Amino acid sequence: MKLYVDTTRKQVTASKDPEPKNDQNGNQKSEKNTGRPMWSTQVFVLDETGGEVITITTAGEKPAVKVGDFVEVEQLEAIPWATNGRNGVAFRAVSLKPKTASSGK
View 1: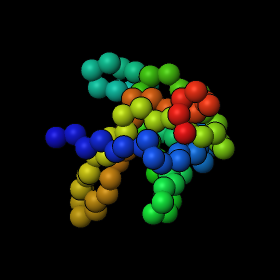
View 2 (view 1 turned 120 degrees about the horizontal axis):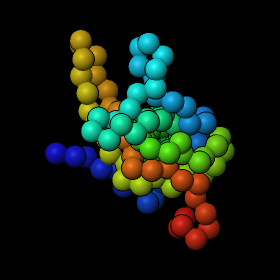
View 3 (view 1 turned 180 degrees about the vertical axis):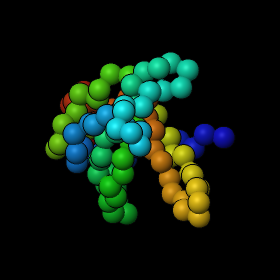
């Protein structure tokens, strides 16, 4: 089951420029099945309950966002994980784009 996060009532701001998502050898990872390059973008998500810094992974073209941009997130998926006694949540999206006045709040 996929867990999607509704970002329509959240303010998302890029807090770090997109970077290649690298493996342990420093090589950029690529998406299984498609081979598209993967990117990691750190963002600050703010709503009425407070704020949190998360890193969102995307595949394909490098997201055209930079630090300080308000960001539009397409299909944000939360992916719980557990490995070697550690656990957390990874985030993945179809795309990250600079938010414009015509794209909503």
